[in-house]
Image (tube, rainbow, N blue to C red; front, top):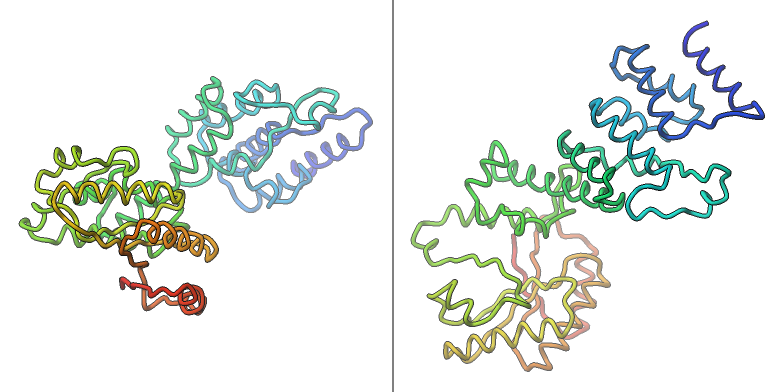
Length: 353
C-alpha cells in the first residue's frame, strides 16, 4: 500500500475510534515535516501539500501556515516553535489566560491557533525569529507582543526596500549613506503600513521625493537647513531652538501635517508655542498651512472641523491643504472637495506632486 494511503487510513481509523488522539497543531507540524523529509527529500511541492491535506483531513488553504513552518524554517526555528506551542498548550506563556473552551476540555489544554503562525511569514530573518521566539519561551514577551514586533519589522523592511528602490539605491545601506536625514527609524516609522506588496502610497513617495530633492540641492542651501527631530508638544521651546538652530529668526509661515491623534488642546498648545517663539524674535504674525490626515472622509472632516474651531478661537490666519497628484485624482476626492469642504466655506490650497 502506498505510504500516502497507509497514513490516510491510519488517521481515518484514529478519528472513528471511541478512544482516539486528536492531532494538535504541533502534531500536524511534525507530521508534515516528517512527510516532507521522508517522502519528498525536503523539497516542497503541490504533491506534498496534497498528501498532507489528505492525511490530516483538512484543506490545503486551512493548513497554509502549517505548511510554511513545516517547510520554510530552519530546524532551530522549528524546534523553538514547537516549544512555544507546548508552552501555549500548558498555559505557560506570558499573559496567557484560559478560555471557556479550554476550561471545559477534560485535559484543560489549549490548541495553538494556526493564524498566530502567519505573522512569522514574510521578510523576517532567521536570527530575528530565533531571538523573538526565545523571548516568548522565556516569558519576556507575550504572543501579542511577538505578533506586534514581527509586524513592525516587516512593515519597516517594506519601507526600507521601497525607499532604496524608488531612490535608485542598490541597497538600504546605500540609501542610509546618501540620505541620512531621511532614513533614520524615527523619520520613517510614521509611514508604517504605507507599502503593501511592494506598492506605496503617494504620501511615502512624496517623502522620498523630498529626500531626493534635498540631496540634489547645492551646499549653500543645505547650510541654511537644519532638521531637528523633537516632540512638538513636549520639547519644542524657544531655548531649544536657540541651542539647536542659532540662526532661527522666527517664522512667518508654518506647514503642519496634523497628527491624527492631536486634539484641539494639542493644536492650541502648538500654536501658542509658535506665537511665543515669534514674539521673542519680533515677528508679528505667522500663517499656518495645515494638512489634515489623508485617510477616510469622516476622519478628514473631523480634523477639518477641529482645525477651524481651534484656529478661529485663537484668531490665527490659516489655510487647509493636502498633497494632490493630478494623475491619480479620483471622482470620490473631487466630490469630497467640492461638496464637503466648500460647504464649510473653505478654499483648499493644493500642493501638486
